[in-house]
Length: 279
Image (tube, rainbow, N blue to C red):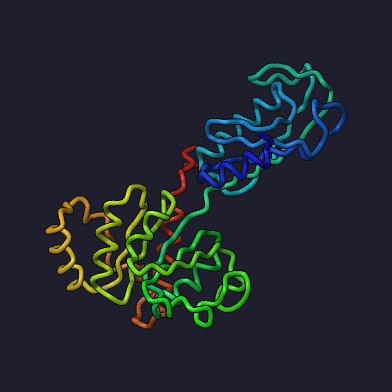
């Protein structure tokens, strides 16, 4: 498998990776400039020349993966008998600079209910690099003249996110189509639907977070129902309600959307590995 096929396969499996490119070559080196390889947490695809330069690049790439690095880095090595690395000597006589580009797993956010708040929220989140799933039991809420066609016209014409629109008469059934690590936001028009989505989210493996829109009295009723359905107190602790950040007050749909979007971006950032070397 070449590096490009490997990268596409890793992305489809939601596995982070680092692309290593032999960016600059001065003098002699095992490979010409432009050679690439892909390093995942437990695999290497392609080659930039083998020997100590490749081993050093793999080690650096794995450090970046462990740290959840988001920015590319440069790694320069001298290939001479006077430059000894942990992986030995490489006497080609040249100097190389490698570019290491992290490819992080794209976050997934699923909005159940594309009413006033859901639509405003989707407008904000669509401007971010993520997979955005919009799910509603009402077909008219997902009509092209309301939400537009991703990549063509309407609200999501210039979206950065990959937008997936799903009409689901039984909304909780759409949970099975979400990738591991998805963040679920529940804001349908119907409290019965909300309850079903929350309950099934708690029973679905791999859901990163569950946010429920609504008041404290709504959550009080939901708590009782969910306990009757067999959920435990520790299960219920996984549900965040109300959602959003308190620093953004207001009950207007656009204000709520800003608050919720801010909190989701915080959760995505918090989920990235911590670079302990920088503490």
